[in-house]
Length: 151
Image (cartoon, rainbow, N blue to C red; front, side, top):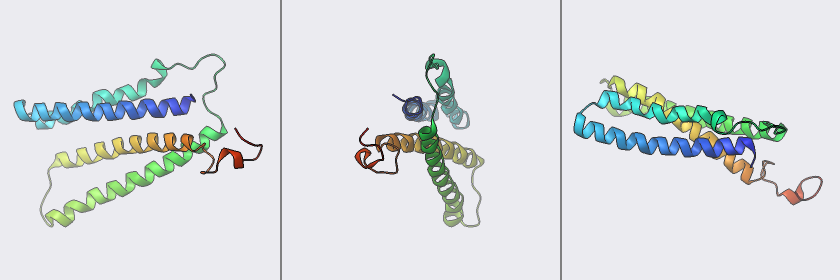
């Protein structure tokens, strides 16, 4: 399995597991300890595992980290992730104006907004990389149609 694809799967699994862990933890803390402000920080623990990819999967001798195809796939995934991030971020900023009107919102909403947008960015990036590798990373063309024959 390619290193970039392995990182995408690893990141997707860690992010989804972290969201499940954070949701359960926030529910327990909010229900039994009433520490709603502190409970938002629980999600940061599993997110730190994403950055430990190079520790868990070190680069082996003779293995390349990425090539031109990987750069193209990563660039496309990053562009899609930024697009989704900004749409969600802008909608999340406009929805309180439409719902509340001239009122005020709790300050925890702003921190949660950035946290959700960042998690959504990473999940979108991972899914985009996995989908592009599944399609062959060649713009949706079948490998038999590519120059040089079938892969």
